Image (cartoon, rainbow, N blue to C red):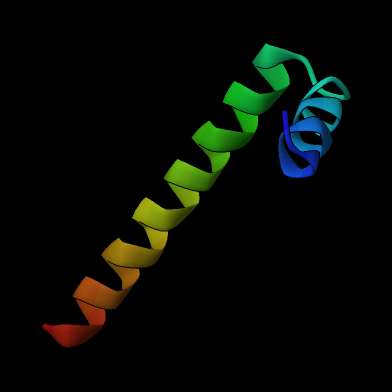
Length: 43
C-alpha cells in the first residue's frame, strides 16, 4: 500500500457510498446541462 492509496481510502472513509453516488449524479447532470447549452449555442 502506498501513501496515495492510504490518503484516498481515508478520504473515502469520510463519505458514505450514497453521498458519493449523489455527488457523481450531480456532476453528471451538470455536465449534461453544460453540453446541452454549448450545443444550443452552436446552432
